[in-house]
Length: 487
Image (tube, rainbow, N blue to C red; front, top):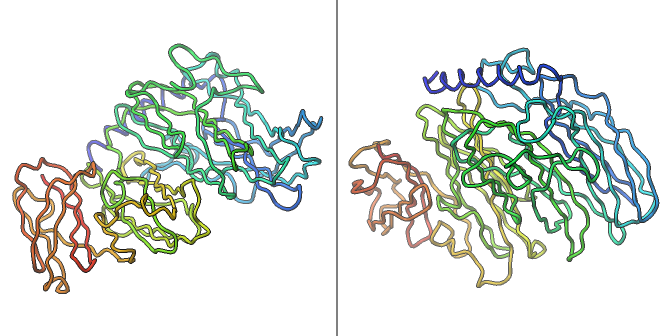
């Protein structure tokens, strides 16, 4: 185990002690949740509640009751939801050999509990409200008044007055712990089965219908924790960027509004608690498309394409895994390489996939640091359009003339290196002229060289010590990608 991980473990144990003292008076277990719904047949819907539990607290409830009402149609009723089979799974990421308090150990752990039942809406109304509240918020919260006496209020809204609708759903578990003085990229991985347009925002956390928590200055819905720059949520992609600056326990509430042809079809919220803690492990990272800082691209229908994304980690000895959220039907995402795998996304959109809003998928990058694994979640956005003027010039990134070409993996020796290195290719490259392009971790082109043959030698020149990504390509559309480290 690395010394930096030992230091991180000590810091985490101190945090656990402080947290347990602050929670000792109230056996709270609620750290977040959301309500979603899925249209079945006719007016029948599947109502689903997800509840995130702190294993330090009391047991999860045996059932969950939601209130369902419409002022427009003068309806008010309730529905009992039951746990789904196999629910209560822990989703905490810790290194092998450590036990969380979900398993009888001391490292903080969190579980995901899910409840559901079907409901037949008795009428078509524009203002259906599905809500519940969970007792109680954690006493350790430092950003609101009297947290242990405040419930977590959750709601979802449905407009079925003109069309049936399934709500947006969250495919990524919330990150409960954030590292102080480190950048964090996160995305809730929201998808909508109807292909509706989604708009993201931060709203005040609530304790009851139309009743917000009382934030302690300087905190607010838009400033839920101390961050420099401030906590930021992209309203179109749902991407979150935060750089915590102080040890805190805060509350964040995301709202996702669901529009179809300009009509509001419904909304969902996710309310979660976050802990900001001192860490010594650097978080793993992902690049944009082909090692650039490009996370949004435009493509044509009926044209197959692939692109690669590259992982990196500044901690020597860490290894990384990549997982995507399967958000685009018919597309594939594969991961290969060790310890820093390359992820490859491939898809052939059809004419039916053309739409004004993007197709978005997320990739979670997870390292194996101790005691708690580092993780971030990045989103990639693909617009399928028939307007050729909008097409992203992927020719410069490894996508040639509308042909799907699998990227080979080149070999760099030595790697890492200090002064000089050589990139080796197989014999199929021997007869053609090729170009080597090297990008830094921000996707900026920092070096290029033309050559012919199966290898290219180069020196670092004035390049600083860092991780670099590169691509080799020739005029036939053949390309190879790789990564090297300059010490």
